[in-house]
Length: 386
Image 1 (cartoon, rainbow, N blue to C red):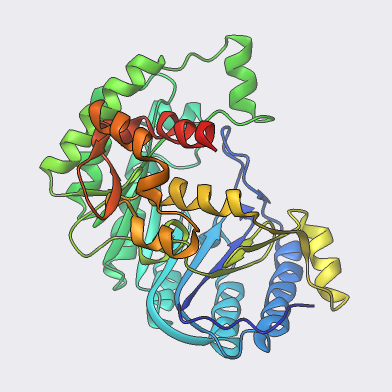
Image 2: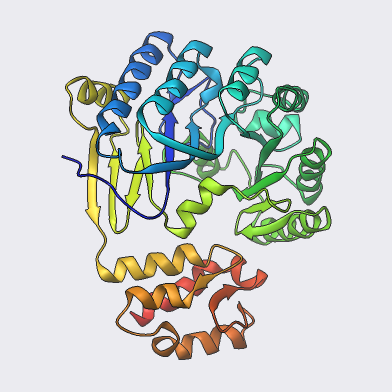
């Protein structure tokens, strides 16, 4: 049983659409190739799950919504309309930002216009790389002209706040590829660019190919050099790094994702969706059929529940806070802790400062550019101390 959720912070709402046209070779997300019968069953279950959460969240307000996947833009327009209508019907919405993920080569003018008219004001498009050969090598369904076409259709629908996802460290990728990708997104007036380093996930075709030696990735040094060049280029174009992997024009930071990093409460709906309220965490089953069966049996589809222990709670504050350019606020940490952060970790703070890994600040633990690139190293020092 889920109790009533009340907080002085407004919630974020994440809605997972686990369907794709095809599975990318590097992807381990909870997604499957689309099947219209399954999409209809999933849509019905998702809307019912919203109804089940309606009462527990009746005293809460939601000011951001993010529909992700998977590929939300690949499902039929009527299904997407029904899902959005159900969000408005079941939750108290005071929307600042309503985002949706769009894959190039999917969607239509009719779909994008419908999304805009229903209140969606931000879209995130997966460019990954502005090179057709590299896109093909990682199993993307689109080419560069399709990305441009989809971006322009979304923009012309009225959705002007658009993010472009870019990945560094791809097979055959060079610094020039990365710069070219950034230039393409900027030329189309992307207000936000996310740049992630490729992570080889277990049980993915790309990792298997790399392990066999059939696919060669840039070395760590090569990836670092190209990413450093890309970061400098992004700054020169007016994109500010506000989080380790995210850059935005002024005022276009992703409000929804900031909730995750600032540890504001959020509710996740659909398969594998995670939720957070204070130190309480719960996650839905990633199995689509099991999810549908649970919801249709009037049961929540939660598979994992946990309450963070004190050490986990405090480490999470450091880990998420230092992802942000603004850093982790000492006062916020101290408000939960029996000790002052700067007293307990004085030696570590001094060491980080001496190595140029943090920016001098009396109020926040702020990683420098070098520190952001070495965040894992920084975090290990706090883990060792505990």
